[in-house]
Image 1 (cartoon, rainbow, N blue to C red):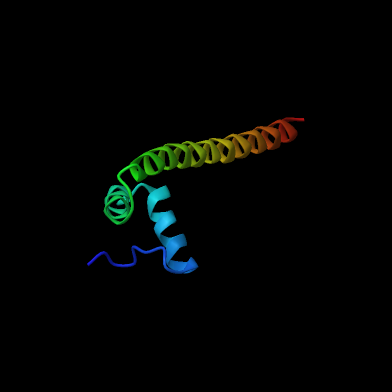
Image 2 (cartoon, helix red, strand yellow; image 1 turned 90 degrees about the vertical axis):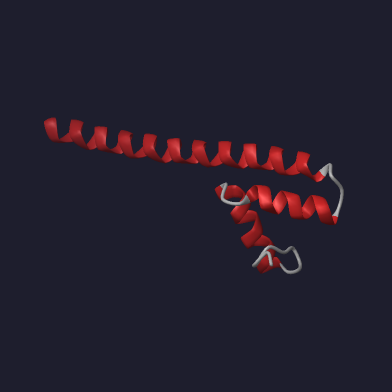
Length: 80
């Protein structure tokens, strides 16, 4: 019914966490967990999704910034 949505073993748990971090279907995971445990689980999922998304965006910006700086240094070395 829910596919690999499970926290029963480490592999399925990591896949479920990756699904939440990617933003694809995290609400379904949240509702299943809320039905299985307590409704307050939604607080965890909302906070986790916001911080995980923020972290991934910062990671992307850092990688782009580093690549831009490397390209800029190579360009300045060629001009010298």
